[in-house]
Image 1 (cartoon, rainbow, N blue to C red):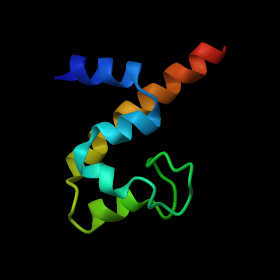
Image 2: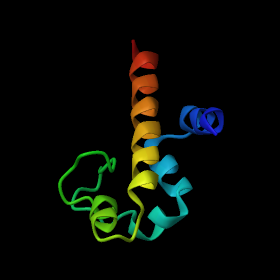
Image 3: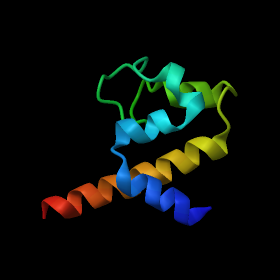
Length: 79
């Protein structure tokens, strides 16, 4: 449900949001960069798992949409 996803993104930071996706949990901390947001960073373990068929493209797309919403909300709060 879109409303539930929106509420989830508003209340969680990017790190907590990634952990909310159960299939992402074993991969968190495995990325090349410690501050990976799992959006477009090189060496992202979650993106690599999706490319290998371990995570569905839809789940990663939902995460990315929510993470981008979250980051926009964080930027607005600093303005």
